Image 1 (cartoon, rainbow over the protein chains, first blue to last red):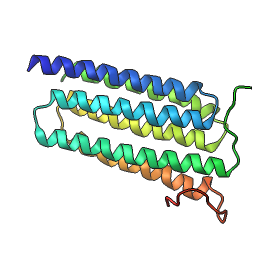
Image 2 (cartoon, rainbow over the protein chains, first blue to last red):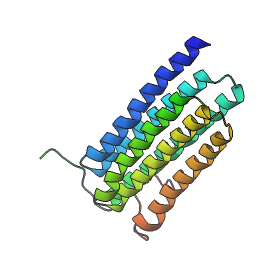
Image 3 (cartoon, rainbow over the protein chains, first blue to last red):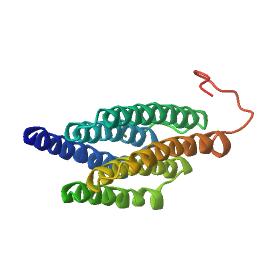
Length: 100
Length: 95
């Protein structure tokens, strides 16, 4: 049980690092598309790592299934929102950032 | 009380507070809405960590509802205020 607990804590720390990098990307990137990229990719990987760590630490199968369903719902919702925002920005003629 | 989970939740709260910078500086409305999406994802993670830290399984259900509501908020924003109504859409008609 101890080894599961400590490996779960390790994966939780990895997930926190992904969350922090997603936030830094949202603050520092120059363009709406690059910000969307940072937000939707890094944050969903971070949430997945948090959910994997908590699943390793929990001993309740129903709770693990519920956590995985929450992760699936957040991924579907986040990808749909990302697609909507990006296509609407293309419609509004917001030009993607280029190095110039 | 498992203090390590609550400490991790506090670190995620710091990430949310840093996201406030983008709300203050966002040139378009969509940037501010993307920060709201970040608050949704971070809030779900915070609620899950708190449910492990305080040993209360109710918070997992609250996180589920929170994820649903964050998705609906972004979707409603894009369809109601950010898109120009009556303009022809290109690409896949998602909604």
